[in-house]
Length: 272
Image 1 (cartoon, helix red, strand yellow):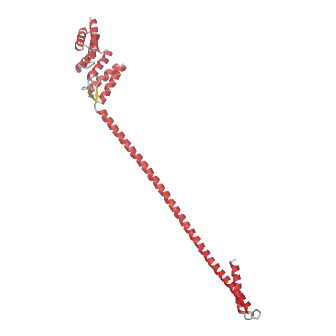
Image 2 (cartoon, rainbow, N blue to C red):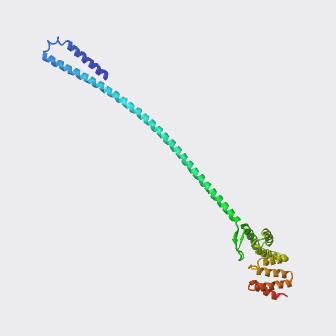
């Protein structure tokens, strides 16, 4: 299209030059007024063509500038896209780093919590062991005293054997207990239950010794009257009536208000 316009413009220029050169020879064919009009008209057309050509050149330049601007915008757009892509990559990297840091912090918090739990368990274990080692107050027979936790546990275990009726094991258990804790506050009670286990095993002589030792160790014990009564019963089993009578009389004299004293009076009345 531009090539056709250029050819047409070139034709008009040639025509104008031809008319200019031959204006004298045509003067006879046209009068002056008509010639001037034709020349003016031709000049106007030539100027319009030149103007159109100038406008086309300007339009072409504008088009080129527009294309350059578009290309520049495209380049800028591509650069922005690359920058956005780089920024997105950076954001993802930061998110990944942040996630790792959060994970590390959570793990650190768990580790700290676990360490604290272990410390609490350790402290609790130490406290428990200390409590197991510290003497505790007990009052098994109206007399309060301090005893080691292991001592209390061993006494209770021995007494549990007696209550189960395992008198043979009870005898050995209390013998071991009294040997291990010779100064124990449980001494009189241990001797009392040992004597009862031996009486149940028909070990009357050994029972008499331990019942007497129980009373001597703690005359104020609530078990003392029962120990004397059991001692007299052991003497009766051995046919030692004289000593049995003496033991029953001592029981009635020393502990007159006890239930064992009432039983002793009845037992004494039946002795021959």
